[in-house]
Image (cartoon, rainbow, N blue to C red; front, side, top):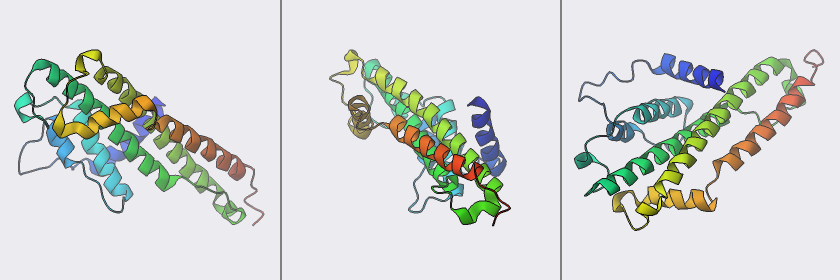
Length: 205
């Protein structure tokens, strides 16, 4: 898993090592990196990789002063809940981006006429599997942060401008948001397709 994650990060770094040459202003806090993350109508691999870079750096960066939080913060308890929610949300976005990336390499079927490209298809499946396994890692992180955000101390604290993040906590708790189930299904289907490719004789066609 760690090796696969390093491979993904290596690819991302090689493709986007110049991505932070921003002349307008210095980017150093979570909130700033998160604002650079954006969704596209059509999610191309390059767009997904760019988003992963921003989100990963957001995860590693410090929080800005509470004055510059993405919601109004008035006391230390609100500030604590906000940090837990933000970390959960960032990890969820990483899950989504790695699923997008994995889907670009995943092969849903092993057609007989793909036999001459058996090895290329197997390599593609390997990349997709690494993406899904990495997504699973971030899902587990998201669940842990959601648990912290559900602490009884925060029960009556509502952060209006990040209400959607609070709803994500509820969805995780009720299992209406369950990426582990989705990813387990995708990994099982991927393995079945891999086995069909491995059984092919590429010289037959």
